[in-house]
Length: 96
Image (tube, rainbow, N blue to C red; front, side, top):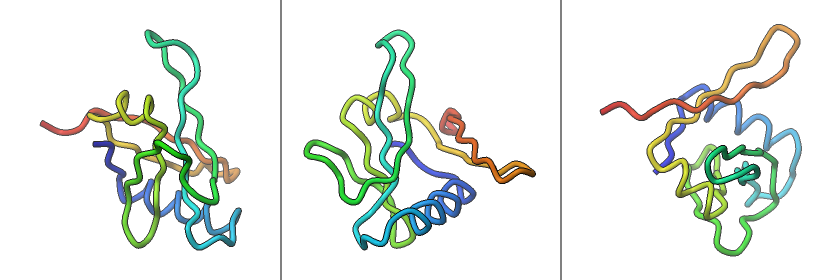
């Protein structure tokens, strides 16, 4: 199952709080691209869509589209904010 670093958890919670007032809102990760070269998009969603896997804790909920959940099952989501305030997400392998 996808896990989040402490940085990703904090940054995602901040983004969701800034963009939604819905108490069930979360960060939604969905796929685009191809199976061989998947691309992932991240948006703020008021609720999970049917079929989404929901992960997270009391600080942040993450909704994973089915294909994204399968592709990211062995990954860790990290996030950083640069000097201009732009957020970057990156995927890392889970530690063995």
